Image (cartoon, rainbow, N blue to C red):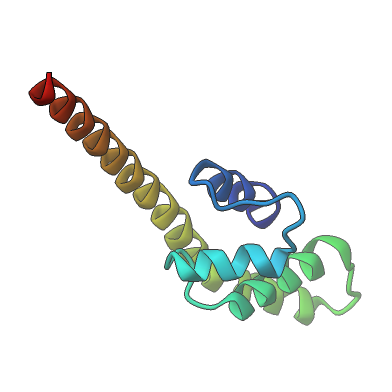
Length: 110
């Protein structure tokens, strides 16, 4: 579950996660970092997921419609995952650059 695990791990890795954060708090942080466009959209994706995995509608048309919507949402979720990967690389490169500059400065001082 991307929202339950990956988002927490990502925010923890960049120093932005706190143990008492609600899902909405996580989503607000992700919105701030431009990982997701809108926290309410994510809540809708979550509702869709719950409907597809936990409810067993007797109406075949409902099931088919839910699957079609899930397929449309898949591209958006894939984009979110790509943004997380890109942000991690950006932060890693920035921290390596900062480390490099600190070492370089220390060497110049001595």
